[in-house]
Length: 335
Image (cartoon, rainbow, N blue to C red):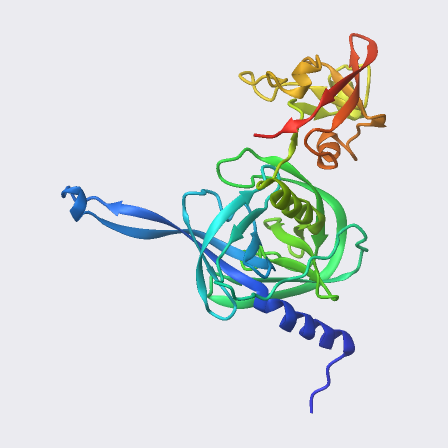
């Protein structure tokens, strides 16, 4: 007779409940085998490109995964359910900033199992979590257990091979192993709720993984429902967030805020016709405040943008040539 501790039994129960809604995603690309024959005699084949995990969040076939799994919208996407059923999937949205993509399969009237969405707002350090996923059908039902070991973490990463490295902020850190087996799958609590989507690990380090907070997912699903796409607000500046050390090196009279500065010589620091441009913001300005709140390394412009919606009106305080002034702008949709 085997004995299972209460917490261990709860973990087993969560896995049994959640795993049927965790899927494998295979990405392939159609290629034409050109043998110098007439077009009608050429053959087409599919070449494996990439894959990952995902999870069903609506019983009509809405599936979440990582954006880096779905790099090219023109590729073919096949979803394999825990039951072994296979479906062709349609890419219906990719978040322009966060590592999130949304797929849709057609279950032909059948209601699918789902992973309920919780909230990442009130997570506690030390809270028990599980990272679930599959490895392209090769190693199904991959599970790792751990705790929430950090909140509001920031890392610099390239979301896909075509993008520049960018800062990913507000992440949930966990010591549950995040690897190619469960990247794109859910990070769940012991209430059987998704509180994050597994997104990254730090190469060379053990027990350091990250997940997008599920509240970002909830926001994107609402955007998709209300507008048919994921809309994210756009300001239109390239900037460097200041602190005392950076300001001293650059010989600046202020040690906080966001210095408007180009990243490369061929870039503009302020995007033409953007909200920032129309508000009169110029290169070498320092944006000190966002609607009366200070811009710091703990909460920078991207953090404030994440809390805003397309169409929001914002007042920013600018430092220029020794003087401070305020200007108003209206955020537009990122394209």
